[in-house]
Amino acid sequence: MRIGNDTEYEVIEPGTYPAQLVEWTDVDQFGKPLMSMGFGDREPCEQWRFKFHVDVEGEERHLSVWVNKPRDPNNVSPKAKIVELAKAILGDKAESDDWEIEDLVEGQLRVQVEVYEKKDGSEANKISKFYPPKPKRQPRAAADDDAEPAPAPREPVVAGGQRKTPF
Image (cartoon, rainbow, N blue to C red; front, side, top):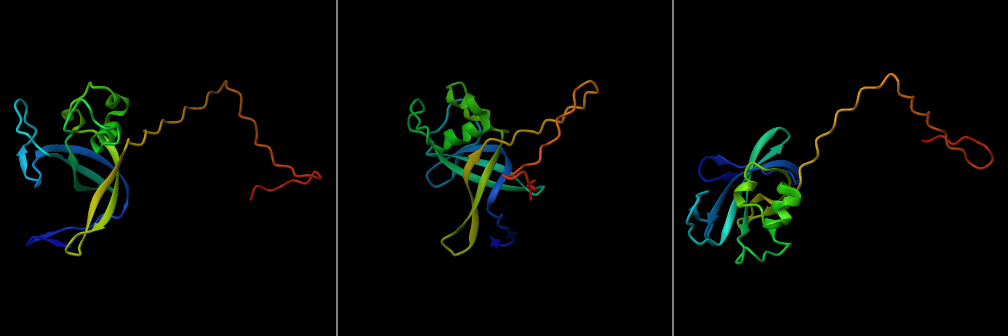
């Protein structure tokens, strides 16, 4: 699919992928930036735009999500997309008031990518869900020479004393 004059966009297959949140921006109701990751006084905004690097089989792809900014930061629905995103990156810390939007940047997570049809009939991607990153596998402990060996698995036996093969 072609975007603009010379940019090609390849749709990502639907699925769950590892990702990293790399940037957030305040945007107005039309998606135009108000200010990018500034501190101090902020102009009022309608939404936040979060930009992600998505790992698609070793290739880095970029997707963005627009999230409605809560009208009352002290009363945010637990079903709000910002809460889902914070829980995926921060875990239990997201339940407290002890975090800021800036704490999400560089956070690792997994994202559910879907394909949708745009008004012009072309296809594009969207991120529909956020999940915590998969836990890293722990290396298996080296065998302890003094440890007792694990018991051998028992073969299943059926009525009449005949052995049942497991396949």
